[in-house]
Image (cartoon, rainbow, N blue to C red; front, side, top):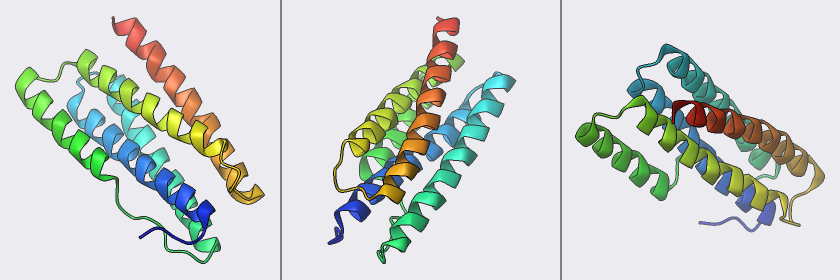
Length: 149
């Protein structure tokens, strides 16, 4: 059930998407053969999990209950990726393509949150800091993808 606090709702939505991202990176690390990609994706999964904890703390600071689970769409996407990997063998290129697609989604979600006027300064600062890291991650995965194609 949505909170009465609009900022908590924005942050909870980001928590779901960030959990989707952390789980996506974890899955990618398990399904890629290249050791450099395995390491990169495992590190990103841990970083995104850390970001989730910071967002949850911010929601608690508003006196609200934070999200603890990924979105329904994220769960469905993870199952789709698992099925696709089982059918196609999940080449490293395919895994990196999927990671970049996920990075496009999370980057857009944080950009949308930054345009929200309901975010108080502390939450806005956290979202901006997270967005800067997410954009850098997105750009790195994009470069990796283009190197592989």
